[in-house]
Image (cartoon, helix red, strand yellow):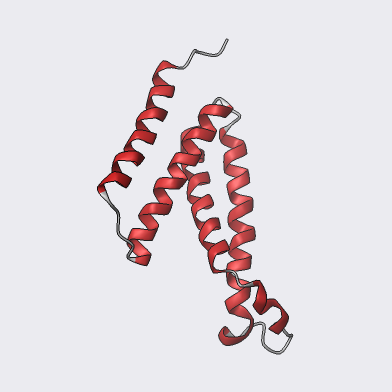
Length: 125
């Protein structure tokens, strides 16, 4: 179950990152009680901000739950690599960015390194 929490944490971290990408703090000064619920008013600012807070809290919860059962260094490595893969896949799927063979190769090397850590790690006492 801890590994599922770790994947959920990486998913939330990916969503959190994209919320951060879409936040425009310059729009904060245009936010008023009359326009905060309108798309051309406050929602363009509020939706990424609310997602940023919610996904950030969910990420903290799932990651902290996972590291109670998985060694912290292993969990952090898997979480970081999984987030990286999810970010790249999201950019390809939603933002139509391209991927090169060297990028694929180096992402596979990251995953191979994590797999090696998992296989050859010294068991906890």
